[in-house]
Image 1 (spheres, one colour):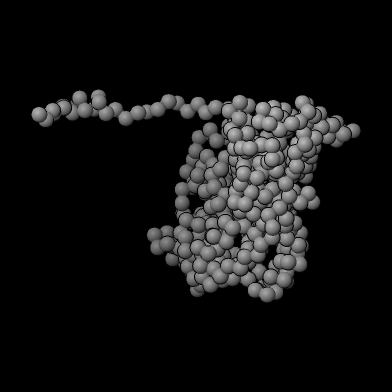
Image 2: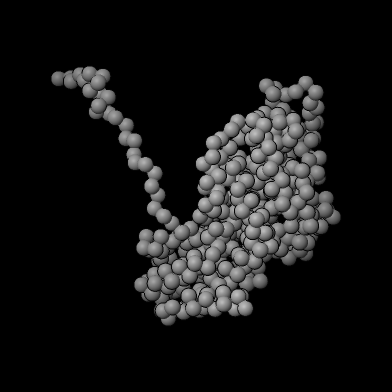
Length: 426
C-alpha cells in the first residue's frame, strides 16, 4: 500500500540539518602555513564592506598599492591584489606574460618549482626544467648557462620553497635575466617578510606572494607587483570584454590572455585611474591585506626579518640539543621554516604530528614527494614567530618524541633555546 504524506509532514520529516555555530578548536599553527593571524587583521576583516567604486573604498585600494610597494621594496606603479589564494597570483602573472610557444625556464629545487612548470605548460609554453637535488639551491652560473642555451622569455623561480625549507639567493639572478632579455618572475609566497627581499635592487620584474605565511593573514588574496618591462608585454596582449570596453581604448595586437579573471592587462585598469570594471573586489580580504602590511611595516621590514632569524636559531638550537638532525644545506635555510629529519627510532612520523595536534594543540607539517615520511617541517612565521611559541613547541615535541621511542634528555631543547635568546639579549 502506498503511503501519501502531506506537504507539511514531508517538511517536518526532511528538515535540512543546520549544523552548529562555528567553534573551531584553538590551534597553534607551526606548520609551513597557513599560520595564526595577527589579531589586528582579524578585527580589520570585521568592519563593514563597501562597493568597489565607492570613493572611500577606492582610497583603500590606493592605500593597499602604496603599502605593498613598501613591503615589496619597489617603486612599481603596478602593485595590487589578485583575488584568490597565493596560487591565483602565480596564475595571473604567468598566464598574462606567457604566450603559446614562449620558452619558460623553471629552476626546480622543491615541490613549488614543479607547480610553476605545471602552470607554464597549461599556458602552452615550451618549458625548460632545471633541477637540483632537494635540500640544495642553484648557483648563478647554472642559471646563466641555461639562459644562454635556451633564451627563454621568462624565468620562473621560488625564493623560498617550504617543501624543502630552502631559500634561493636571488641577488645575482635579476641582472643575468636582464642581460639575456628574460623576464624574472619570483614566487615569494613562502618567504616574503620573513627573509630579506629586494624587488628593485635585485632587478626582479615580477613578484607574487600570499598573506598566509609571514604576513600572518588569511589565505584569499595574492599581492603582486610588476615593472614596466612587464607592462610593455601586457599592452601588446590587451583586450577588454565588449560589455565594458570604452570607445577610446586601443587593444593590443598580440595573442589574447587565455584567462579573463587572471588577465593582468584588465586588472591594471581596474586598480588604476580608469577604474574599469572587472570583478567585484573581495572587500574583507582587501581590509585584511591592508592591515597585514601595516603591521609588518610598523615593526620595520629589517626588524621583522631579524625576529624570524632569531626565532629560527632558537628553535634549531633546541631541536639539535634534543639529538635531532636538521634537513638541507645549512647555508641556505629559510628563516621561517625548519626541516627536521625524522629519526629512525620514530616508526610513524604522522603519529607524532597527530599527537602534537591532539594532545598539545600544535600543528607541524610533513612534506611532499621524495621527502614525505622523511621530514617534519616546523614553521615560525609572522604572529607565530615568538619566543613563547618556540618554547611551547620544543617542550611539547620533546614529550611526544619520548613517548614514541626517541631517547632525549628532558628539558634540554628548551634550555638550548633559552640560551640563544639570552645570548641575543647581551
